[in-house]
Length: 114
Image 1 (tube, helix red, strand yellow):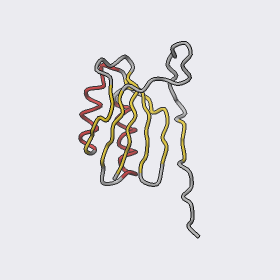
Image 2: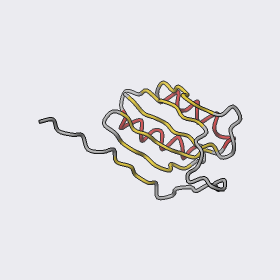
Image 3: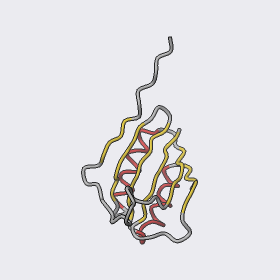
Image 4: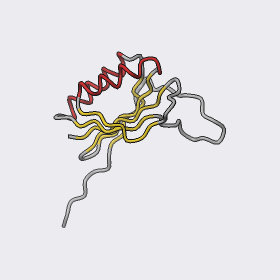
């Protein structure tokens, strides 16, 4: 018998930001989605949270899986460039999907993987 892995745990940030949604939308749009390869997911989670805060943004949720942690955050557009540079200092940041024109604020999904 093979033991099943527990489902990913999602944590909502206590200071979550809600952005206005277009009529009919049920969730905010994601403006940038990327993968951040790191040596230690645990340490990178802490570093990404601190980076979001330094950029004047807010961590909206964090979902830990067996091999990947997904962090959703909102970052002010004027701070996004420095935020992205900070991600490159934490690990190897690769954008997987993104808009050509980023709105303000920018909704970012960071997929952390070792």
